Image 1 (spheres, rainbow, N blue to C red):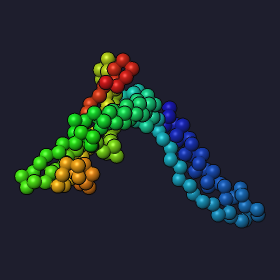
Image 2: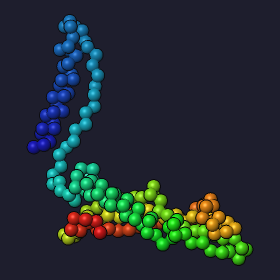
Image 3: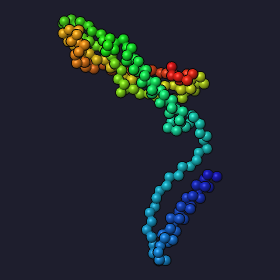
Image 4: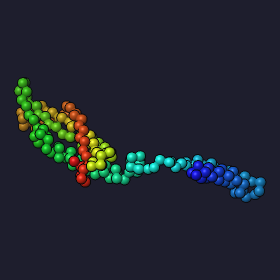
Length: 173
């Protein structure tokens, strides 16, 4: 049925483009120059559309859950930064064998956050979210612990992290 409709549309388009120059001519012998335009036609599919085969950008529920998860992830990272054992406010300062002091702290790079959300096959957990981020380690060396705290810190290592969360009973856990 759909093939016949598509064929009919294409046939009409061809006839119109062939006859249009003669119809638009001012004099019976004049020919009007026309322009051919390519038209894309999407053929309907026999596959039923459901949440499993729906393109991600059309799945409104998944888009909403992704936005919710992104907000959840940002607040989670803020909390992790504040409560980290080796945050800047709780930096580790060690005396070196040469008499200097080395200060070290960890921080999560909020620019490195990547959130992925997908549907789950589980009936109790409809969505799963994965949070990726990079934790950076900074160090500074000085002659005293107080000077270490105010010294110029440089990044010395990057630790990639991944946390998996599930959407259960209306919230991310």
